[in-house]
Image 1 (tube, rainbow, N blue to C red):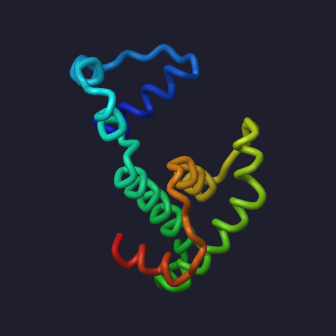
Image 2: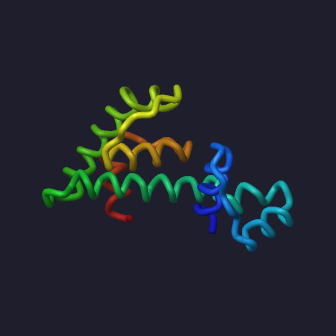
Amino acid sequence: MTVDALSLLRRAAAGDAVELPADLAAALLQAAPADLPVLLGLDRASRTRRRNAALARAAALLAADGCGAWIAAGRLAAAIERFERALWPALLGGARLELSEIEQALHEAFATAAAPGTCQRRLFELLRTH
């Protein structure tokens, strides 16, 4: 429910007509303000899980040729640096860019506000455990 709730609320904030499921609407209405971040998946642990899943998805796309996890981690580190330098500032500025699948995954990772690192060793560990 968490990711769906957040995506539905983002769509609603963007002006799209959305229909909230009854259980979600009830949970949001009954929740204490302090519980909303966890309910919406905005707590640190949820954001980190979403970031890691997006990074793993990007790495899988970068490793489509069958390379090992270490090589994929290096490619991912380079892709993160390029994205952060070239695309992320434009996206933050409101630019509507056509993104590749890898760039979409990196956008999802950056949008969590749980900053992805560019250290190949740490990315390798993430890929081994994910």
